[in-house]
Image 1 (cartoon, rainbow, N blue to C red):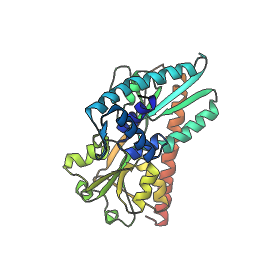
Image 2: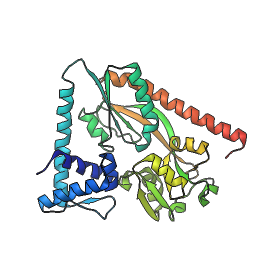
Image 3: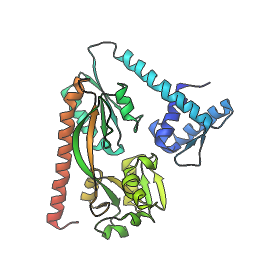
Length: 311
């Protein structure tokens, strides 16, 4: 009656917040995922979550199954990994991220690492996007990339680089004429966000909530590329890391503005358990170099635009 795929779906719903985003995560159509869950609810004779809330809200029965999923799925992955790595000489590097926008610099770093270390199995885990510390402590990850350092015994953080959180706007948006964005400016806007609860989003925690401001509408978008295309089309605004928008800004498809007069500065780090993984030790220098090169290139592009008079 209850299958592993159902538990994975519940975890995806919890992490993504919407059926559409969860379906994308699981490589299913929304209708197929909805049918799967309705069929399960029919078998169990109870509703597992409320579909009209964003993010979805689990019923008490759904929360029971969700707790089971949190217990069972990690154990399944652990056994699978152990079976796959039955040869003790097989090296592996399991990477977790707590940042939807990290793929822009992380994927090139992984490709470079695989070229230099072809004997290492590299796995990018996006299933527990905002519970990475637990995954790390339970040794289901060797590395966790995060912009929110949580001090825990035994954890070490290595600084990767710095960035700013900015507001991405269409060049034709009225707010594009401002030097910086104030919290009240977003009150009448449709804010495009990643599909996670607002208490985990920096734009709410660090900018809007302290000012007591809520956007007119919050719309979850699971893919960074789609989100920025929607911003360019004037369908909303989005708070994103500066590295994500600079390339589009170079082509004058988008503009970015600081959040507040001083902006919001952030720091990106890699968390790991010291001495736990030789592959992790060899991967970090590549990541730092890739991130630095990306930032340098973005800075060069910005300088070229300034010199040519393009803003």
